[in-house]
Length: 410
Image (cartoon, rainbow, N blue to C red):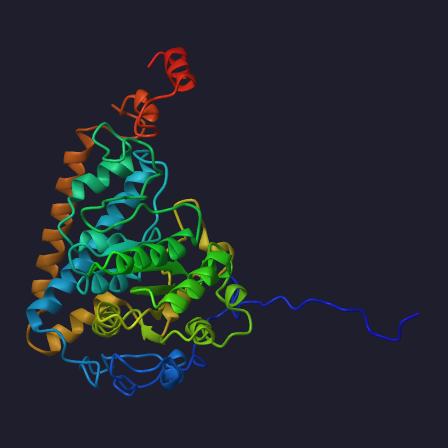
């Protein structure tokens, strides 16, 4: 007989469960402006501290302070605020549409709008995003037609993807938006591969990969870091840490690592954490990373610290696994309110102007929705012909597919 005690596994548990009173007072949040801003050619080993801190620009007095501040003028910040408001209004309208049966599925970016909207401003034509399903802000902050997005969500006759993708899995090569994948984490290694190809061709375009905190537990995440670091791929690797995967808290995927950004240090990749609800900070850090990639200095890993204020999707009920008031207690606040208050403090915005902008944006979204509905919805049609499922697969359709198409009568 063995004298050893029986072995057991440690299973991380979230601090708060439904019915608990959430308290984030133990979350270490540095003062805005206190984290240094290194040169873009810095060595990874010289900025290990940035993988454990949080870069912030806006302080509690609604001021932009520190070395990462003053990169945007008031007009640019106003545009960013309106971009975030557009994402929130779009999400609310599509959430309602799903409840009305116009689409089968939707996923909001509620509380995370600053990340994609700010990042979009550092990209150039030809750059390619490999996103997850919460980066709709990349499209809504550019000139991508909102009606086309809704057509895709409704899978109607004008769906640019011809009904071949799930709702919200947009794709646009012209707008640098690679097809969203339902298989989590694949886009991380794909983005690195695309960036490597750009460098091999001697091009000037960079790639950006996106992943959630839960998906960092997938093997593709680690494979991406290996190839990105080994070949110094011109890519920005983004981890959106919104604290929750589908229903498991971020500690399950993070394990005993102090932060997700710290994972990059073992691969020799410069890694930073940023306040994902601070539009100014996200822009500054994203630009720093994009500039590194464009100058051939290799990859950067960014952990965007934020909070998923809404459900994981329209199929999810978060009250089953977290307190209802947890999002209200999140210490980094609401990204739209923070940027609004910053502009008001500067005299470049007002409550009245905010209300006016909100009404205008909601009207724009409603008009785009009405236009898309003319092309049909999921249940009311019309839809793209089923025969299109046989197109764009082979240059010349093989006999067995011709027979299947004939048997299907399409």
